[in-house]
Length: 129
Length: 270
Picture 1 (cartoon, each protein chain N blue to C red):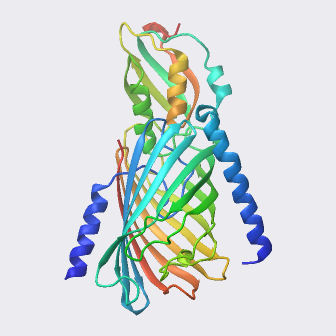
Picture 2: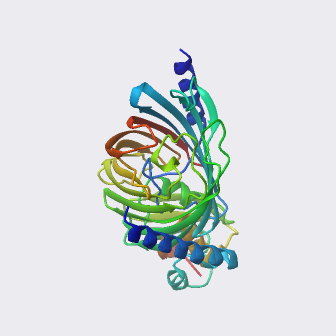
Picture 3: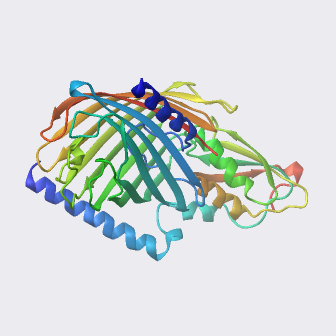
């Protein structure tokens, strides 16, 4: 391997480590590629009991179903997530008496590793608030 | 008989291990566990070297999501050697060196329902936990980057990792990366979703054919480039992977030449 290439690779690696480690140590929740603008676009408020359609981007493999299931079921009041990978949709049901926030839904999808583009609530069922 | 029995034990260990999902068999991917999620992964490998020498390996990887875009991982291999002396022989067991690393996702562009492009950087160190002639005996830092793109039925991965070898290397190297020289791993991977052509609304598994080019180049001039075809079945809750590693080109001074490698992995996803 040429010495110049070795020196370049060493420099790149050192730069990577120097950038990565302090950033992670400072505040691990704030580093990385999270889509904060998309989170903000989902808006405030809560979801009423009933069915809601989540438009999700980036679910590219069967494992995605497990990830989305896991994160959404951690939210109090959200039951029975149904993932439709073909259309990028996740249908959730909010049980009676619960009112999960739109932000919590968006963060769950982000935590699962995907982008929540939109929440479509069923108006007949009470929809979003 | 002892070889067969030992190999069966190694495969049984692999089957008892668990892991994450759509990734190539022999290289990193820019995929991270969710925050608070621990993902174990196991693989069994069998390598046949020149002069009918064998190495069996059971590798366990534990990956934990610290934050949305940050994870920590530990990789620990268990080896069993059937080499000629002075390398481990007669089925001698030994731990390999433990890899500890942090991975930070720096890019996530979800383009539509399926397509996505992701990139991560990672850094860590190989710790001298090796026993029985399978360790390097030094703390060796490494850093690298990986890019993953999934476009329809096609998946692409590219990764580069540079490892600083701070000690004298393995007493008797088995791979190019075991020498006293720094080394670079350069990997390219392609996955094609064989089935289904399009995901439906039902929860169903997917079959992928994978093809990787895995390479190691040392600063001492040694190198090994392997072509690695594989098959991956991935369902929402488990994945099975099966693959081969065939040398394309090798220029090795300290390590024996590889003839072929076999990979078997089972992942259970919780």
